[in-house]
Length: 431
Image 1 (tube, rainbow, N blue to C red):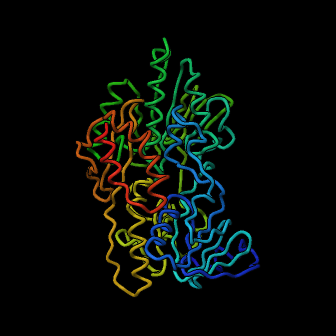
Image 2: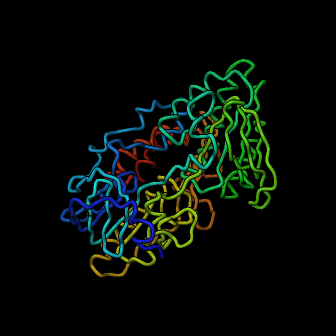
């Protein structure tokens, strides 16, 4: 176990102030706001603090549609202050140290925030630096990524102005949030190229992934394999992007055999969309709360109760947790009620009876009028469905769901801790 003195003492800021809350939530994104809302709906007397540095709250699933020219960036953002639930205290600061042995976290401004219970959901860390040359190349001369609001609008600029050549789309060799996003943008780009006279004919659309199939769930992978075959998209399995050379517009890939590099290849690009490597934030990696000896530093929690495996007054959900399922907002929708129920049970010294079953969902956009609503049990890689429809099909109505209904549900139902399943059925009946 990593101790505070081993890794954190050198960077720990001087403590200027100490405060105490019954419940401290690290992160004011989808997971943090939803869980706080659920808790306060159960008990308005709870003493809750949310530690979140950003004054903006993004609907991150919308960045794919921003990169595809469907949304403007401003469609995906609201002021954080408008979303903090009534009754919660917002500490606008960044956590730098976790000290679970003393039930405290320390912020960059030197605030020691002590707690009775802790919920960790800060989201995922984007490790741009792990691909040589990427940070310096982003947003310039054809290099982009929808994994940042800074560059998603540039993705659309590149796609709509593209006149032919090599269009590359990559997937990294780490777990990532929204695992379908690297190929969703490819399908929208391909649609755009086909809409312009002669462009698609003079274009090589190429997808590079270190994996051996298009998606983790075999039934959905089969659908996507047919999509890429029908569209004549080139898929390179066992390829991991390791370097961008902007001066020559080359992408350098390791060629993998059973995850081991056995060679490398250089591919020229005219545009390249990069899904970057990702991991838990460093303050989690360097703490006793991380999974021991884990490269990515996820918070070590039970996959059903979402309670920490060693520190029983700590819970985690969302992208930074160790839950072995896809990292999506849809997964958070199912995880947040489990955390809320089990934390309240813990405070009452009652058994933790609420269980998370691994549910997640990735709306796989396969064109501007087609989406596969890929719901599945991430623990067993089995398709599931919340709708009275076969999920193993591309559907126009699911494109409308992705474009119109899911953003509305996020802002108006999920973040407020309200149920929304009936909204889906009403929409399908209306259509």
